[in-house]
Amino acid sequence: MNINWSKMKEMAIVTKGAGLPFDALSFSNNIVEQVHSFKLLGMTIDDDLKWSTHVNTICSKASSRLHSLNKVKD
Image 1 (spheres, rainbow, N blue to C red):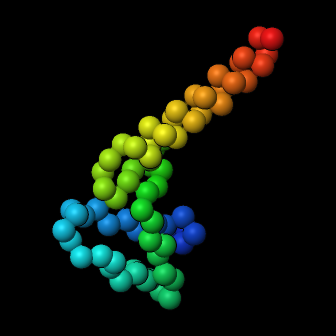
Image 2: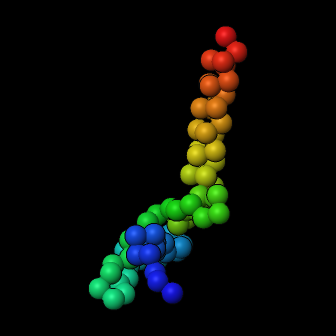
C-alpha cells in the first residue's frame, strides 16, 4: 500500500490543561502536517471537539446557496 503523504494529517485531541505543542511525526523522511481541524466524511472535526467550525462551514454554504436562489428568483 502506498501512502499519500500530502493527504496525511496529524491532530492532537487534548484537554485544556495539557502541554502543547507536540513534536511533529515523521515517517520515511516525510513530516506529517499538524492541523487544528480537518474534514472527515463530510464533518469538520476540531482539536477541542467543538462544533463551531463545522456549523460555520454549513451556515456559510447554506447562505451562499440561498443568495444564489434569491438572485434567480428576481
